[in-house]
Image 1: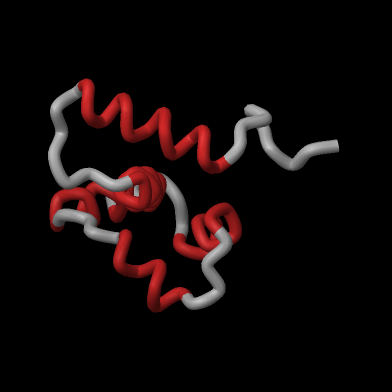
Image 2: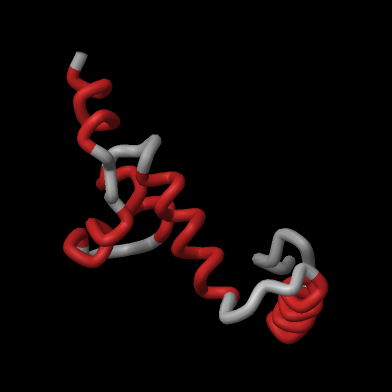
Length: 79
């Protein structure tokens, strides 16, 4: 049984990502950037410990880089 959801090799994912990026004419975008974007968006919705469990970070200091809440977002959570 494979752990892969889509049953794709990493090389295939890399090639597909590059093709789509180039077709969209986006410069200087790397696959790792998509992980950062996804974790940043999840950080807006999840508590830090839940996010750590999902993405596999053991060091919460590293994970805090993704928490970039604006003051109004923090205020809305309080009340």
